Image (cartoon, rainbow, N blue to C red):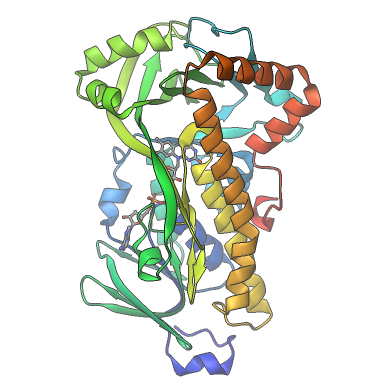
Length: 417
Ligand SMILES: Cc1cc2nc3c(=O)[nH]c(=O)nc-3n(C[C@H](O)[C@H](O)[C@H](O)COP(=O)(O)OP(=O)(O)OC[C@H]3O[C@@H](n4cnc5c(N)ncnc54)[C@H](O)[C@@H]3O)c2cc1C
């Protein structure tokens, strides 16, 4: 379907849709919905069949969705269908030490949503809730064509548009390719975009637990020498844990039986939530930083993990991806209103300028936090403890951190306001 609102020069190539999004994980569908609601036609391609992505046991992850991300999900009409399966994060407690044993140092951070006029800093949402909700909403949206179980294998771009070829041999013509194909983005490498990054030698052990006592909506982050342990509240007496250990230890723990795994977890977790038991499977994720050297190339833009993948220490990976979604949606809809080519270099450059500084700052912050906290050096320990104590004692600084965690700082796209 060609959109008659575009300049005649682009009419020489017949486009199947205005935009092709490669990757139907989380950020790809969010962008597809935002663009479709603005009247653009979108084709979204994912290598995995839809039933695999819809599987409610597909992944062990749960996301801390910042308030700004919740606003975006509301704007794309997904939030209402999931809100009652999410858990508001009412408080966040950060301690330098082992869970349950009380902080090993007297310094800790405590963020309470009562201090923030906008409400809870965010909501916890399981991947198996968010992913199917995005897919269901796309199925209801006539401007979106979905292709599942077929991978993009090549792409060419020219002055009139871009052509993608899928593994099945099918070809798609479009004005703009958006790479939402994750950390090892083929869209980026086919466009000649290099990446900068490194591994942390850490692996995250991820699972859900049920526990005897209520969590009262409190999220905990315990900084331990091998890496942080996050205990994140889910609806009911359940929590998700993201436990970072060295690759070697994580591999040993991952190989344990469920009972033995709980045995090594308990002393770190403590007993503040009473008896704990595993709910569902356990997953491991190797942790590393990877940032694309450019977020754009001729007729190509990258969003989400395809543009940047970072340590989950601050739970900001998906939130940063949804900011890309908001920014790219706004840049493209503005360009369309002005009658510009959606993939004109200065249009794409506007998107890149908007996002790159924010992403570089976040990548540096998560990287430094991990280095500062994932060790037992007494000097660094003193520095971080004094820092946490100072932040906690100063209400305006504490509130500034809470606004940052809620995603309310910086140049917010309209969909997040
Ligand atoms: C342990 C852990 C905990 C995390 N916790 C949080 C958190 O609390 N809060 C938060 O904000 N973020 C968190 N994150 C980060 C978050 O999971 C990611 O940022 C997010 O999943 C990225 O989504 P995406 O859509 O960009 O990529 P993905 O979800 O990786 O999707 C990419 C899609 O592209 C498809 N694809 C790939 N290649 C092709 C191809 N050639 N053709 C067609 N399709 C293709 C894949 O099949 C896949 O479906 C966490 C990450 C980890 C590892």
